[in-house]
Length: 173
Image (cartoon, rainbow, N blue to C red; front, side):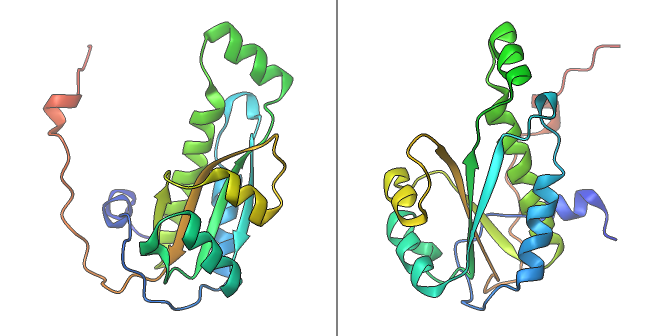
């Protein structure tokens, strides 16, 4: 098993996929990692639609981003209704933990993909209405993220440009 920070360092948003298909077992491992993610009040406010069909992938490219055309799969993260307990906590704390929970699940999913040699890109720019129509997702639900999955054409990780730790960290002892 690899070092966690090394794994995090290898994960990046892929903009150039090879076109190779992604195996079902690899996709299921990514979904399992997301399923096991923590959530407020254990509400698990998500469901996942995995798209591997070539024609449907082509349709998703049209309503997401052109650079995903060679991705081997898409995973659509759908927001499910929060549990009653989560709704109460959200209201009391004036915070929508559902969005946080979906972000955590997406992160788990992308890290699991990286561990398996896959590349991902979390897409926030997409036509939600068209995706719902294509995938028969009820109008009452929200598509929160679409993750393209595949194999990168390059295995070279680009250096990460991040703020220095001293700009982000305040230790109170």
